[in-house]
Length: 50
Image 1: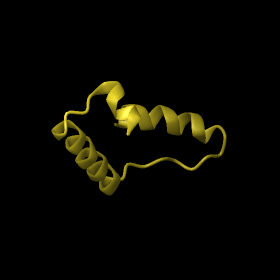
Image 2: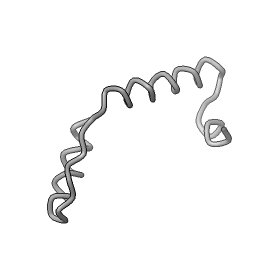
Image 3: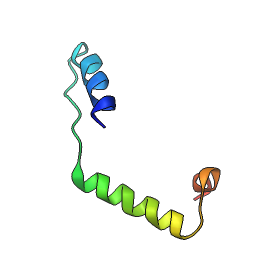
Image 4: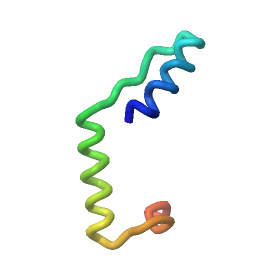
């Protein structure tokens, strides 16, 4: 994920934005939701209809 955060934070620094950081809690919650969706058979564009 640092491959996304580093460029974002480098650009943000030029605009006096505070750096983004990873959130373990948010990552775990997002993974749990994604796993739930896979368990119920949702794939691709089907997720957009939720």
